[in-house]
Length: 98
Image (cartoon, rainbow, N blue to C red; front, side, top):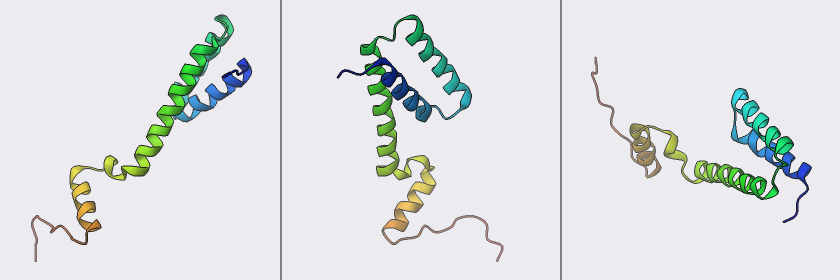
């Protein structure tokens, strides 16, 4: 896989931007990447490894959100959603002032 350094650098910047949603973290990662390319020649093997890691990590998150949608909910919400999926409803517990 032969990629020119500018193409590799741009691809890494795109992956970093999608990986870090906070501006401070993205800027820090971008500065470190720029330093690596300017001062250490941007070793293409390390760059390709980093690009593969970042794109694999992004893809893992996408697939996890797609096929495990209940992961971001609490245990109670998971149980309620699972019960609703099979046509049941969970009874409400607590004080009823009726």
